[in-house]
Amino acid sequence: MIEDAATHRDLVRAQKAGVTIAGVCTGVMVLSAAGLTRGRPCTTHHMVKSELAAQGDTVVDARVVDDGNLVTAGGVTSGIDLALWPVTRECGPDLALAVERIMEYERRGTVWHAV
Image 1 (cartoon, helix red, strand yellow):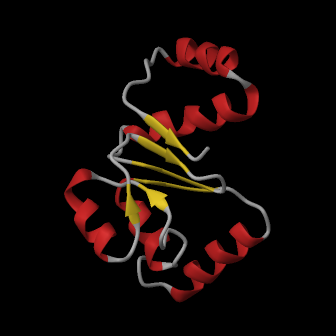
Image 2 (cartoon, one colour; image 1 turned 180 degrees about the vertical axis):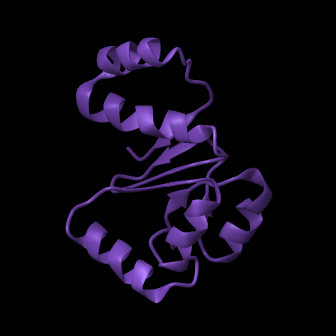
């Protein structure tokens, strides 16, 4: 999938249509291959952050990075934090906290977001 041109085109088309694109762990490398992270704040699994930076991306040391229509997360367990972040962003922290309680999960780490 990382080199699948059709997937890349679909991702770019979705983002241009207004869809917020999210990636977790090394899945962010697919977004990078599609050009969606180029020059933008993003993160991925710590073992491939240097590879992401080498592709021209602005790697941020955070568990979740929110750059508007692009939201990325570190290692696979960061995916839960990424899933909770849009709830916080769009519906507020009270609802996100309620979802955390239902899931019996406690968020941790940093969410970096563009101002």
